[in-house]
Length: 172
View 1 (tube, rainbow, N blue to C red):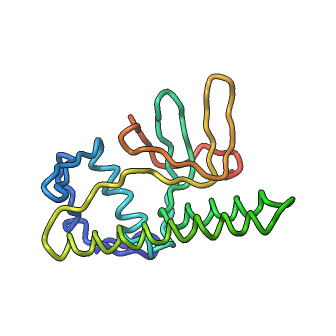
View 2 (view 1 turned 180 degrees about the horizontal axis):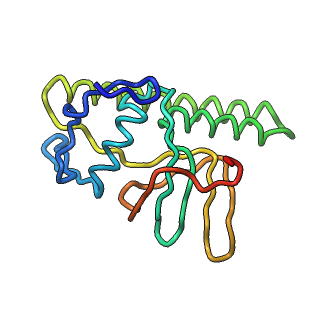
């Protein structure tokens, strides 16, 4: 077992083929970067119930440099719903209702995904690769200059390169 920020996982049990493919219900899904998938699984855990995992990462994404802290889908969605609540100062009732609805949808989806992953693991099947990278405290560098965002979500298949650590002056 390899402990990383309170999470333990036997890396040899990572159920994504080194070629970056996983079979899901007879359909092969590919992951462009097996090593990034493993890094995120070890750091963030596979279950959305594990919310303590964090890892600073900088990625190349369609010509942009995106840097922030990778978190689980659940942590990211909680940040999103809090942002929606905070944006509703003029009409907090509607903002709270929208945030609660969104939170319910996310929770149901995450619970279903976790149940599917547990069932696949028990059946000895390969894990479904992560579809998205979820970041918080984000800095995006582009030709016009850097921009900071509270959250960011990007398709894993759009990531063309990565390195550990963040490039965000707020972290310094």
